[in-house]
Length: 369
Image 1 (spheres, rainbow, N blue to C red):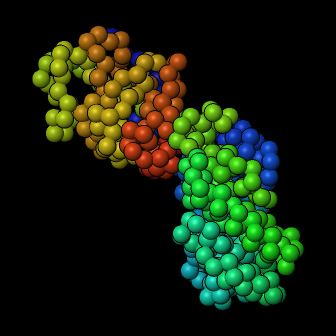
Image 2 (cartoon, helix red, strand yellow; image 1 turned 90 degrees about the vertical axis):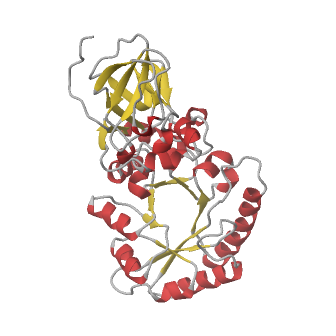
Image 3 (cartoon, rainbow, N blue to C red; image 1 turned 90 degrees about the horizontal axis):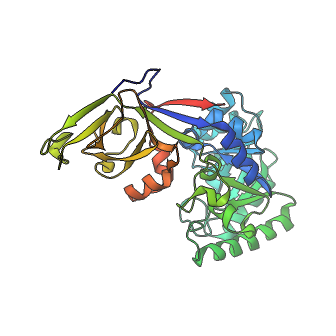
């Protein structure tokens, strides 16, 4: 076997920004699009994906924390930014100082907002069924909205809720949430005039136009991931991220020889095994031990043995033309084969969000184009 030549990276996530632009153009065909870039753009890179999302038609950005909003401003991002998470008084000051909108559902929060040169812009949240943030009492939400509207130091900008089961097709909570939020939003608009009304996450955006209102808040879909955990291509979405490594070693194994900690895999017959320098320290979860495929040379090969912090091992078969230095694809396409984050998530009994968000900072992000 002749070793391959060329530059190698032990773990690199390639992010196709054209895919982000295209996905955003697809998602912004109806109402205004708010691109959610929290958690470092779901592991894809907040700054780079926020800029690409704006190029693709997103007019708003959303994050979960004040620090995330301040980071986007420091990176030069313009336009409205919504901080969707809970904030202490100190965090609210950071968010408002960054020119970001905040979310309120109580008088106590309003009292802690800074009054100064920057006028806090507020969205009031009604909890219609998620059971996390917001108030479940529509009368209380209306009172908070009125308090904001009557305070010259504050600006009432929007009304919002969040869907708990939009990704569960055919459930009965989702339509009930739409109904109760629609009724409340109509009442608030009658009292306070034009406000930005928004509720839909990625799943709701793709599932039902009745959930769109004035703006949709898409996160996972802008990165080309399927909120229904199937195939993003069904919705005209293109995965933006691929994860690659390389073959560091190819070795012959005889029957009974093992690879990895704990001897969780042993060769049943003479075979070849490749060592790939990526592991759970990079976010490739230990639960994938003996439990996923990788692509080498355009063909699927089983990961065998225990995923360690820095390496995995892959069975190549009794005959192989795989060489040291060959590219390995853990997420993405190679030849006619591809491995989606949705497939890996199914192996882990989780969701695609966790697969990409779990990639650690040790994985280099490379942006194309």
